[in-house]
Image (cartoon, rainbow, N blue to C red; front, side, top):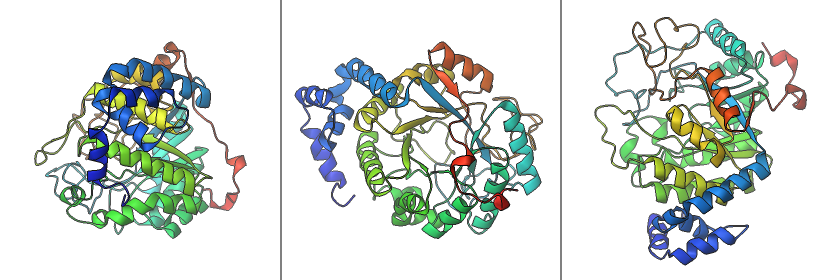
Length: 384
């Protein structure tokens, strides 16, 4: 980040020509300059060529497979004040905040296991005191009794914190920087531990050094100029691939759609821009997994399957207890009778079976499980 400040990235874009895009398309290993060329407006006429190369690289490294996963929100308590988030302490929401009990977590796991899931993501708000690491470690242990692959998307931890979770069977960590821009970051995060830019930036390296096998990073599209943030995201991914070489690095592309009334979306990202970003990142990071959540509508998700996506969520709920504990009154976009606060409204509310059918229709194989606990050294005593 010190070597590539905003001014240097902006200057890089100002020099991009169509010739730079054509040269980037011909290379097997691409530089930061090549990444900027593929992300630039000059690359728009070349999107079809980029799409063909992205498809080739994805099939070369991942085959025709799409991994399926589901999120389990175990708490919506939040001490941070992120102005764009529905969980934020001052978001203005009057819906119920709750933290699931161990028994409720088991109920959620049972519900998802019955749907066929083998890969789940546990999520919380930014509340390290109210939802401590010990509680999350217990949740990981409970989930490991149902699923061979358990990941978390929680507040940033130090290496010891992630090591505690790995000892309970944690496989992966997802953590978004939201935006890498140092000037914009403090304007969006007004209180809580998340205000510490450097600690959050270092967290994924802490996770890798602690022994997590999967690391997913991303920027929250809509908070800042996506073309500049994408360069920093690519640099971060390559850094992690080098420093944490025993872990697999993946990217997510969360796009802001519904925000609290107090936040005005100043940098909206269009469908075409989202596609360009994904194609450019695939050419820059051919071995990185690409995650696509239910933030995006069904029709767009179906079109993106063949353009670099390797993992998709389906049948998701973004409120604690959304699958079993507080399921009554909730069907897709209908929220009548549900009082538990959700983080964001999902756009693709199809059940897992319909998503599986769409994946197969596109000529890909849905994968429920690609990891088994027999490959790790977790003591059975830790599995509840």
